[in-house]
Image (cartoon, rainbow, N blue to C red; front, side):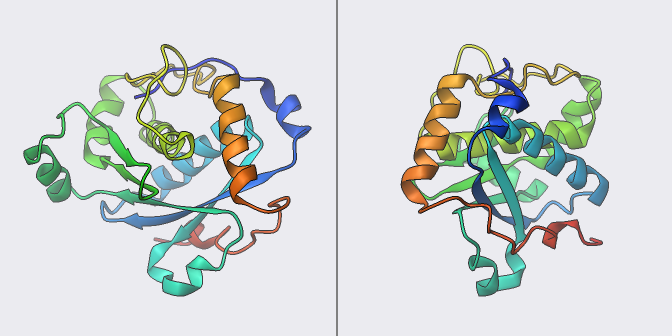
Length: 201
């Protein structure tokens, strides 16, 4: 589901106006808070290169969680039972996540990531963050197409350095164009939810 190439670097990203994506998160997998923190950091590292800020909001906060400026998307970390149900419905057993661009919802197959991480000698939280970034990438790019190299490849890139775990420049332009068309003005003001998912879990 991922692999990667540098898309311009932090210096170039810093020159752009910051845009915001609000991720409304449902954690049905009981994710370890340390893994969750590293996943957040890795996903943000990837999106930093696009000039996009990710705001993570616990969906259990209800309607209040919707009061964030930015493009609102949904991410569910699935329980083993729900992963099993999706497999029975035809999902490949090698898939680490899936996305529904039409509904703005990404699904993360947490147990599979937990099993793959040690085999590939990569931190589980880091791998989790890359899967989240990949699936959110599908939501922002509006389709299920994969690139030949980069974060959006069909196969998960587990390069420990993460230097290849980024969007291509064309994908960066598409993501920013999507956000700029959906959100009026600079999105540096979305303060709600920035600390919500960092609490003790």
